[in-house]
Length: 114
Image (cartoon, rainbow, N blue to C red):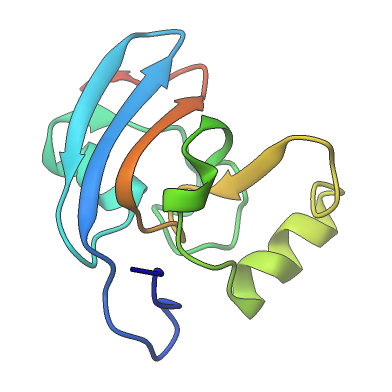
């Protein structure tokens, strides 16, 4: 089943995130962002704006499972374009905007227990 766009769509199913290089894994609830889930599980995800989507510090590289990620909404697309990551060879997403419907592996240095 395809994922719904989080902007006005139904929430995606949730899933599991594995973070490299730390090896941290956690579950994501339906409709919850990767950033929100990390915090709920007691993990610090590097950010300045606290998950509002304005600082772009939470960017992560999706190494595997990109098809399990929600569609990129206009706000996230604008943010990725502003920092020059909108059209790279790797799938780069903002954790505060990304919802998942399955398992993903991401690369994000600095994720650690609070």
